[in-house]
Amino acid sequence: MSNATDRAATGVADYADAVARFRLADFDRLFEGSLETGLNVCVECCDRHAAGGGIALEWEGQDGRRASFTFAEMKDQSARVANLLAAQGVKPGDVVAGMLPRTPELLATILGTWRAGAVYQPLFTAFGPKAIEHRLKMSSAKLVVTDNANRAKLDDVAGCPAVAVVTRPGESVRPGDLDFRAETAAASATFAPVPRKADDLFLMMSTSGTTGLPKGVPVPLKALPAFYSYLRDAVDLRPEDKFWNIADPGWAYGLYYAVTGPLLLGHATTFYEGPFTAESTYSIIKRHGITNLAGAPTAYRLLIAAGPEAAAGVKGQLRAVSSAGEPLNPEVIRWFAEHLAAPIHDHYGQTELGMVVNNHHRLRHTVHPGSAGMPMPGFRVAVLDDESRELGPNLPGVLAVDLNNSPLMWFSGYWQQETPAIGGGYYRTGDTVELEPDGSISFVGRADDVITSSGYRIGPFDVESALIEHPAVIEAAVIGKPDPERTEIVKAYVVLAKGIQGNEQLAEDLRQYVKKRLSAHAYPREIEFLEQLPKTPSGKLQRFVLRKRETAPDRDAAA
Image (cartoon, rainbow, N blue to C red; front, side, top):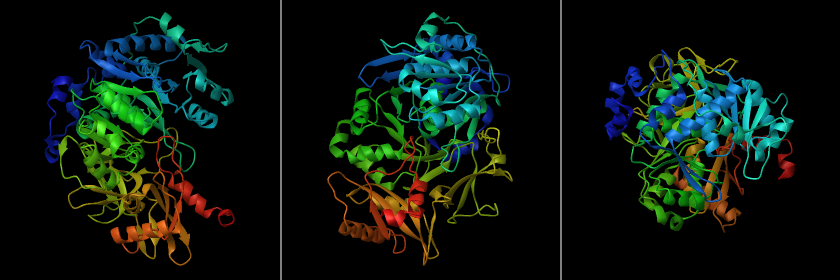
């Protein structure tokens, strides 16, 4: 069966049947090459779709310019980039780093790196020199492709490799740098793809580094079936869809599922170069006819903050919306249903895993608001206690992947360092969850996020979800604040809707609101109003920053 036939035949399927029928060997027929004997990721994501004349990239610049690029055009561009890399001595297995905004040149760099059999490493454009230096040193990258807007950051990077610069009209490159446009224009549009095997790498990622220096996450070719499955079964990407994953390819969700996944299915992806705003997002959805959207709850809450009037222009247009990066609050689900007429489903994963637990759009199973969903076919997950014993329903423990019964599992350890999370046949995610009787997974919180107060274990997600149901609240973050009597108390940091002022009366209203909606012991005893919450560049909430804020020696003096 061809790739196109497989996709066209998707439709809605029964989850239990999909699990029973899952065979890793079935993916071999979806690829032109073979993971065992050799394949090339650029061929799988680009070349094999070129003859069909389809679009690979729909691009819009921050100045409003638009362009479409076919798979055939990207095939030629990837060959030119691969020739540039080879001329610089880049060999199969070497790392090439990219620090570019969401432009056609970024996609050409990624595909060209894969065509040459090399490994692509993303560098988020908001990174500073130290973050860049750590990642380049870790990967031993041979070349960095960037633009003039980011070039100066590399001046302070010790041992910086060679640099190729993508210029804009009227710009030039420094002496010693490569002019990306000139070099690729002069290069041949022919380059024989270099085959690689299942355990060879094609991506070098990094963890977010919230508890120490970021760790390298090597991604081998055998991750491709898992990426394919997620786009097909969880996102339900169909041939007729217009797809936009608003996550930045400088991070895992964007690189895995805004680039690799859709192109692997022969489907166009969408790049918007401009900054994220509610106005720009609604505008892109409308102008490009987006029907399938993916992103993070942070972005969706900003859409909600813009109000129902802003959403009215695209109501009913979105067939499926997927959310990843942090738990999806039930209030967001209700709002999307009411004001966008769109089903939004929560998905769970990590840089180390890709997505593994999802409320699948294509697979039929019960969807519980506040639940991360069911394990993706090809993964078996378990909830473990402190002794690594599997727990039954409604008992909090650590979410783990069963390594002996998860054929789609591809992560085997961090780059050149130990991985304590792997052992005894499991990979432990570090996230606290509960198994529901129907096999779904309910998210409680990060292991260090769970609050212990007067003997109760309180998940911050539930409290946050209750808070944002209040019309005055746009965002909320909940932590455990050390307390001599209760061990910890629940403290909430709250961002209010535009025009609303925080005061003690509103704080008390919020406390009573949560107490009434949640429980008498899980309400926030302290509430502090902030203009914004601390987040990673990819939009993930950084509760650890708020915890440090509460334990800082000068906290009382500064208050």
